[in-house]
Length: 265
Image 1 (tube, rainbow, N blue to C red):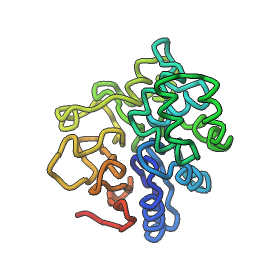
Image 2 (image 1 turned 135 degrees about the vertical axis):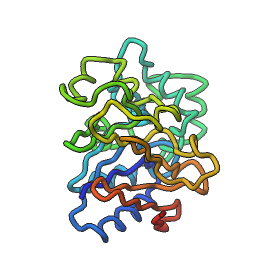
Image 3 (image 1 turned 30 degrees about the vertical axis):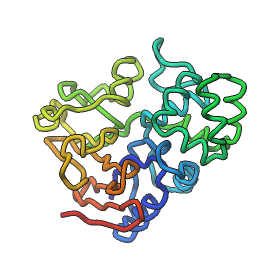
Image 4 (image 1 turned 45 degrees about the horizontal axis):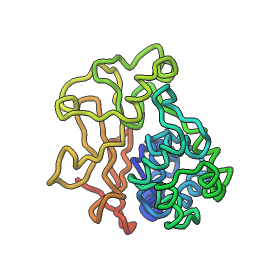
């Protein structure tokens, strides 16, 4: 069966626990990841190493991964005239968990702080030299969307009034920078989640933590007509979880930050 897994954000222990649990229930499991493997959590290099070792897995690109791609490789998927340069992107995402990722690769906090105040491309390159080429290649190769006959998966957003049929989403995205921006950065409103979409398939997304919509509720995937939101905030606080949803059965399996497995009702 096919299992869609939400935003990991450098949290290796819950990732390992979730993979073990899903495989224990489904020996032929195929995994689809919605993106955001880096930033916020403390073990982004370990997360990428673990994902590189997986078979039967599809890895999609999140907005944090796209910014990391720009910083590492000088290019990003959304790529348009208003995209930040690598140094500006570095300074911007130091406010959003990038420091944890770079320190996990061996960077010194004081040097990162200095770079924020005194941007220098050569100094930044020396910091980034610690990122292995295989990790750079992993980030560079991340796809934007995964499509199947019965569902599609993307990181953040597909307009509810946009059809999801032919031509395929990936082809439409290549031709439209606005759609690429929305796909990685857009956020649904409560009304959009609740109402019927123009889509023929179910869309699975991460990016926006579900507790943005249900602040007092248990952090479990949020479901609406033709949509499932999977970011249950594993790196955002003590109550965060990493979630997997089975596309065939709808079963939800979660791991908390300590790696304990939860099966919410």
